[in-house]
Length: 514
Image 1 (cartoon, rainbow, N blue to C red):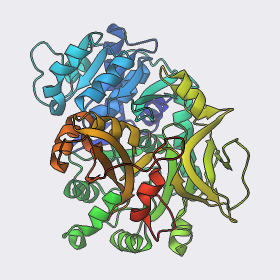
Image 2: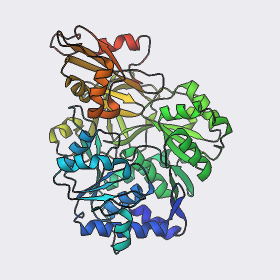
Image 3: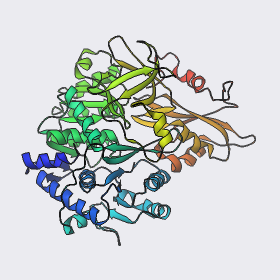
Image 4: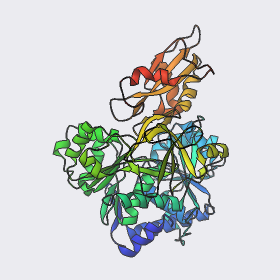
């Protein structure tokens, strides 16, 4: 199956019903189909068929959804660029993927000169904003209005659909190549186990970064059922609550940190959130105290947690009935339909129930591989199993418990931060002799990035100085706290003993990861 199937289905079943809402702007299924077919025609005129990557550097909007569909319709490969990245990270991904066409909205026009200078293969930039396009740059609406519609390429199965970048353990981003059929598999898995998540006529709120697989899958779930996808104009708490009330949103995914911000909002009691029927959260478990507050704020909503990655989609689910019973809330749930989960030792042998080892996963949504990184692909995808780098165990009831990280990955409000990438940024400061980056507990769901720094003899550097040095390089992944020591603890083979560095921060806790 192909992702553009949702356009054809909506056009056949409810052509004059709205399928997207963005502020005051609504698009019906008929309008969306025509716009997608015309934009696809413009992309084909520019050589974007035959698997050509087409990039989007923008904040979330209804046009972003049309971009995904039009690229697939034209037989291209969509490349959503993470808006939270530094400019240098954006340049790396655009250059490695050899993206030649890039859509940019007003929020990122000031970065365009530097990007163009560093990416000579980038031959055309399209403006996505609501206002007039800058001189010499075609506009999104202009391309649609002046181009004839084309037939859908209807690529599906294992044909590449997109390149979605995620940070890499080598300190460089990795482009996860995802296929049409595997994205659709992920979208079908969620409602198969949790029927309330996605219903005909439902209103789904998209809240997350549009460069993530989880956003794509959430949107496809509602698209397959039919109904309305709501994109808020602003994603602060007031913007989210306004969208829920105005559009009578029925379903939404939230990071646990966002849920905490919502229930901490001083005006939450005055809001009408009764339309919400289903809330999904992922990447971090939820405390019973927070869950109780969230359930009170959303009295009609069923809650479910998911565990997944760009590389394999959805692996496990903690369904609504476990949340109602308060059962296994610190777990990641049981394997989802179509997913297999194993716990293995260093040699790849299965470990007994309750023993901690590496979590490996096999689903129908496995990535095709990492773009231009065959060695990284071979290390992660072995014999049809993704080696996650997460440490965990399966209990007597088949629930997965994540207790540690084998790879140095830090969970910041549901987003993976690889410590090696941060270490390279900190170490590039001229006063730094050595650095180790770890995740430490946060007062909200997830972790904080903490740097343990050894300075060169006779040199000085403050926390503020290191922070200012790192922000242009790694943006939001910059450490929020620093610790200065004379030396890092080392093993007999010279490796930094990060577990020793973490001990004081995680003492008394039953797990070394949030």
